Image: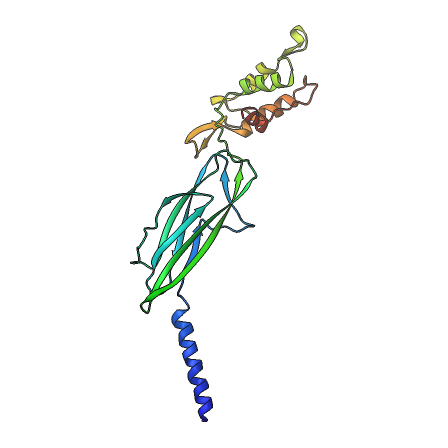
Length: 240
């Protein structure tokens, strides 16, 4: 093998070893929960979110220089001068109080560290990451207490401006009374129970199918001359 080729091979090996030995030097920041500009973190209006920035130091020993959160309030760490681990962790609180629904925000964390070397000041490394946040409408949990069919009928009739009484004298009747006569044991109406168990609230709540069964009964009544509105969703929305 020629001498020139030997030198080239040796040089290539040195460069390769250098790349392997120093490939992981530096710092890499990752913010959790993770997000992108197109896949943002949803935060309800008026709520807060804790963000955690982890700075992976790779190989070697580093000393902390400085860090900065932008768009969020620092909660913890890292401690200055702590070089005993291969990563630094810092947390911050993002608050959406006073922010408009639909608005978008970017939180940034940046850190600078130093890797000592050769009796000199060493080398500074820095990195940053962003969290992308969108403010959404605060969800409301509405618990509708179970009510018997006659009470539901009364609310539906009132909402539509319909009197409970229909017809004249003995030839007439009462919508609410007709609903009551249709009920079975334990207020079952049209084979439908008035209550269902809600895991979130840990209580029995109004059964939507029960409410809508009453609405259907009224609309199909012989003496009903109008199409009534007022299903269960309408009632829930009226409570907001």
